Amino acid sequence: CFFFTFLLVIYRVSSQNVRVVNGTLGGTVILPCSTSQRNTNVYWRYGEKTTVCDIIAGEVDFEEQDAVYKDRVESFPIEFAKGNFSIKLKKLKKSDEGIYTCNFPRILTPDTLKLIVTVNLKDCNCEAITGTWSRPLFISVILNCALAFTVADLLVCCGAAESFTEKSVDLGQNVTLKCEVSVNNVLWFLMKPPEPPVFILRTFSSKHLVPQYSDAAFSKTFSLRYNSSLFIHNISTNELGVYYCSQTQTGSPPNISRGIRLYIQNHSAVNLTEDTKQVQNQTDCNYEVINSWSRPLFVSVILNCALAVTVAVLIGSCCAGSNSLQSPNSNKQQPSGSQ
Image (cartoon, rainbow, N blue to C red; front, side, top):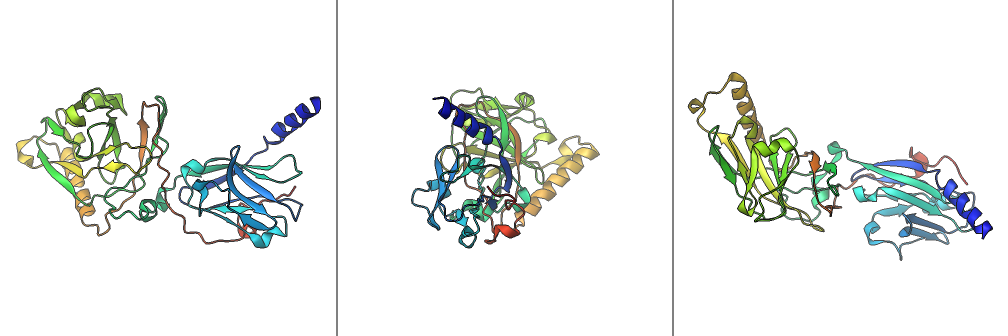
């Protein structure tokens, strides 16, 4: 009993020596693994028991591979004879983050890696995210939404303004916007290009008019009407822009409405300062640019959203990497040591 307890302590202490590997959402990363043994089997695992891949008798075995890694893992067979059993993980998802182990028979302590996936908006690829979808209208990926009143990032990695409804308003007016995609579990956003979209509020029911605001200050201007319609009180230039609503739906891409653009038609009817006029002119200019795009795609981010829910929305679709297969000998993340 003491002997097995001793082994367990050694294993836990040794496993604390974790190497950090950084990757980019949608990109490719090398997970390094090497050993002084040559003809050995290797078992790559994520967490405690999720199978990434196995290398048996010099051949990569995907028979027991978890479905989330299907067609995303490559190895370097030419390196096996050198004791290098590193693998390449492609099309990185945020859900790929975590602990990976490279396990060898007869070796107590595995190579342990911690993968961190970051978001680089400049490298976002809308076509890769949407896959074979036929309508790249306003496709978004929602990642890392919060559990139990925490604040997390809501990433919209693919946006479009292919079409939206024009709605003329007067400053000081009250306006109600209807959500065309759903009447419950709705997220409302305001977008003012080139700024990223702003998450306003979330609804939970078509009949209960108490939303969850991303910022308490929004409650002074925005509220709900039945069927999750958005009510805007006493419109100012701060509320001009394009509004979108989206239904949260676990397990599939979110259903996002066409935009509703609020704008001022009669400038002479209101007393605008020069600064206000410049803001309005800039807003009009931005939307003219959007409408002139032949490929209605642009990259934007929504940060600092608060979702008071018990179940997070996690969409694992993400941007595909285009890096070609290369030997880890030329990669900066190649392991430098061996067991």
